[in-house]
Image (cartoon, helix red, strand yellow):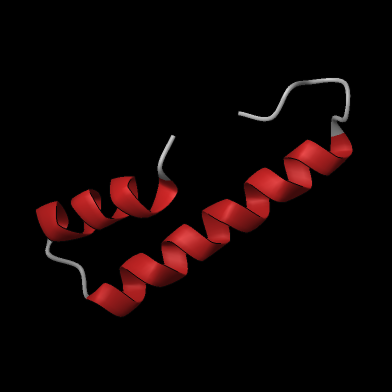
Length: 45
């Protein structure tokens, strides 16, 4: 799963600015990290 690539594609598709895309990818990365910390028994996705 490539967060930057996926959000970059979605950002261009929906016409969002690059800053919004970067912010969304950072938020998604933080959420994934938090989820990995809270569920250590699950393998990282």
